Every structure is written in structure tokens, then in C-alpha cells.
Image (cartoon, rainbow, N blue to C red; front, side, top):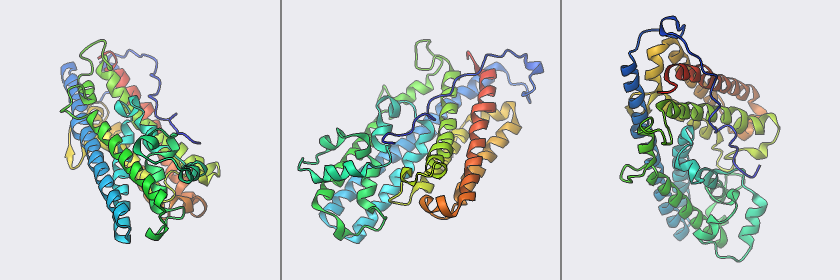
Length: 366
């Protein structure tokens, strides 16, 4: 598996159209005037953009610049303190990124940023070959390499080593050259991603989401199309964590497919993916909360809203119940991993099933 698993990220197919009178709709818990409903959806798309997406991408760009700074400092002075600081910033940027995987649409997909920074596993044979040749490892040269040789995971390998115990003395001159270019690349890609949503950029994608339904020829000719994109993205990452990130290495017995093995960060990656789902569903990020999908669902079906939020939390808790690294849990905490998969499957089913159906019934053509 030399490229990122993306089958779970595509927006799922819409369900067959259903026309139901409001008075006999079994899901309806209270009457919501059409105008009020329109305001809720308009606001949830705006608040998703301004409260969740933009600040998350901005934080990632800030940490991308910080990662470049600390890598340069490490290269100039190979001390344990500088190595520890660099690893901390790598993890912080990783947290930002993993939470954005709950909305992998827009520039991150259109500009091919996702596979360019987060393909796993590292192709160690090709990496060793790259380190062994005499080609200058400039940012441009690294950016032109296959996806498994650039981004988070080759840098992870260089910073942590194969067993996660690398010391400053073990860095070769060639590895230092490579890590600098990888840091340059990640900083540039994260800045590009933020620029794609930055309100200072008049053509930013956030404006596209906010304007959903305002023009027939837009990316989202209806607000429902934008809401469906959000739901499909959340369901997609829930499915990917359970079925691919956990399932492929665990159930297929292929530990070499683990996402972040060198840093032992995989379980944290998985939790941040589902925290990202919570951020999108509840419209919450960085201590701020806005109108959200939860707001919309609660207007029609409070029980469904309660169940979705409970399933998000139980999925995060199930992942937290794995108390060792993912690589170790594959053999020592199999029941915890199986339970996490069960919770994630249930979350995915709720999102692409009942939530998608509710949104379609209430919003299609709006």
C-alpha cells in the first residue's frame, strides 16, 4: 500500500428521493418553518467555515512554520533538547492535520495535498535508496518524489528512527539534509492549504461553502449539496479509521501498514480523526461553538442528535481504552481494538444512514 487509502473519503451516493408530508413524517419532532430551516442551514455552513475549518487550517499552518523553525534549529545544533522540541511540534502539527481529515474536500483534495503529505507506510527501501544517492535533497527535488517519500511520515522516520529511540548522534549528514527539505515542504503545503481557506484570499474555498445554494452553476448548487459533503466526509473518516487504519493492519495481520509506527502516534491519530468528526458535527473548535449539524438535527429528531453525539463520544472512549501503542495492541489488546472498530462502524452507519436520510428528506433541492 504505497498510496493513501481514500476509498472511504468519497461522498457516499444519495438515497432515493422520498416525498413525505410534514404532518405524517415519523422523524419530525416539531414544526420548523421553511424560512427558519433555511436560516439554520445557512448559519451552520457559515459557522463550520469560520469556527471549525478556517481556524483548524490556520493552526496547522502556524505549526507548519514552527516545525520548519525547530528542524532548522535541530540541524544547526543536534542536541537531545532540540530533538525533543522538534518531535513535540511534529505531533502538534499532526494533531491539526488529523482533525481536518473529517472534512477532506476543497483545496486539500483539489490540489492533491492529502496524499502529498500523508501517504503511508513509508517505503523504506526507496527511502534508503534516496538517502544513498548523491542528488542534492532540495525542497523541489523532494516535492517531486513519490508520495511515500515526502510529508509527515518520512520526517517521522527521520526524527524518531525505526524503533522510536533515535538519538542525535545517529543522524547522518544526508538525513539532516532530507529532514530540512521535508520540513520546508510541509510548511509550504500547510501554508498553501490555509491560503485556500483564508478569508483574505477573495477566491478562498470558505466563501464557496458559505455561498452554497446561491448559484445553480456553483460547486454547491443547493445548500443540501454542501451539507451532504459534510456528512459524507464525517462518515468517510469514521469508516477509514475503523476499516482501514485499524482494520487493515489488525485484521489482515499486516502490522507494516500502521500509519504512524515510528512515533507510536497511531492511536492519537485515530482519536484526533474522530475529535474532528465531533468538531464538524457540533460546530465546535478552539473553545468556540456555532450553529451546526447538531442544531439542525435536534430541530427534527432530538433522539437522533443525542445518539450521534453519544456514539461520537463512545468511539473516542473506545480508542482511549487502548492503553499501549497500536503496534503493540495488535497482539496484546485485541478486544479493545475490536470494540473500537464496533463503535466506529456504528458511528459510520448513523452518519451515512439516519443522518443522511434526514438531511435528504428535509433539505433536498434547497
